[in-house]
Image (cartoon, rainbow, N blue to C red; front, side, top):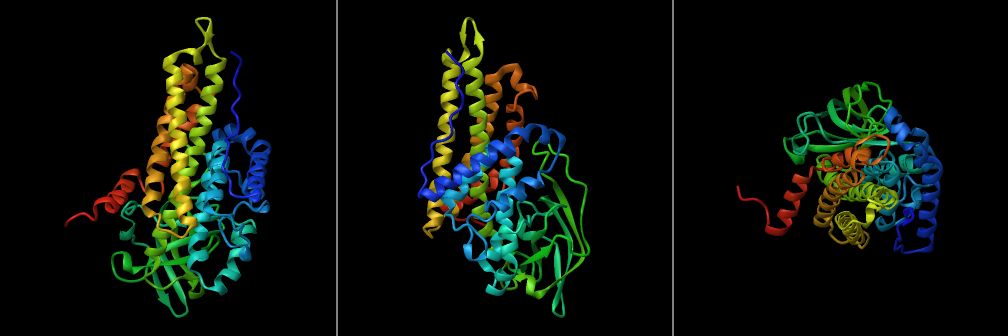
Length: 390
């Protein structure tokens, strides 16, 4: 049996424009991302030049309004672009998802004046965003955040520390959630903070087991002054804005997870069909064939789940439950598929000579970001059986 090269995923896309978009993404992946992914991840290189290229190509603002520099693409299409990017390099796919998350507050809740002033540069002007919600003492319990914004005339003074910030230290702008009022979710307000604001600094990036090319760092706000014109939405509306963004962001993580899983399956199939043992390809052995079949099924189920949730969002229907389900299922599937891919390659899978060990390390973080999978189960259970009794 000859080696079986992986075939591109057959995608159901709603328009010819969407098909051309996927073709463009695949061309960029093959020329600019995939050939350097392993080397640059190993070196911890952040590919800012790739994000500049994606911005120049109109790929950083796909789900947003073209009046402000976006791509007018439905989430059904945008998420499949993320999957293609993440399959090539998770640092890039997840980076685009985080950037989109950082744009969500202004695009959805900003005034027309704010959107006209800031969105064109954010969506297609080469800028890169960060989303600042988590803190050292408030991760899953985001409503207990302590970063404060105090009114000072026509300005706000922001003081506190944000943690686990993707693009921390390299972002051009940050969407920041800070406490402006009472304790709990009703005392939180959203702000758009320039990345070079005076008093804003980044700590040394975290040393992570995967995604080494993506900087994750604490951000310190030491009396950062921002004008009230950079407040997004009403005072006290920030937590609702954050939850709205996270519903969409969870779909982005789900798509990235399926991208990583697909890359792992492709590598496993290529290896299994080319590796000879006992005089025949190891893909001929039933135990391994069934493992590959299960991996493919998990991927296809996850892809269908995130696309179903995306179509609800595109139709303007509630999708919070489905977003949590997609994030939960797809990231758990990615962890299982990448672990199995390492097993398929045997000893080679445990070496850095093959990419499956990197995929496995990267898959782990997807079960944690945008709300841990334990939080997703809590969200789903509330939709199914109602809130917890107190």
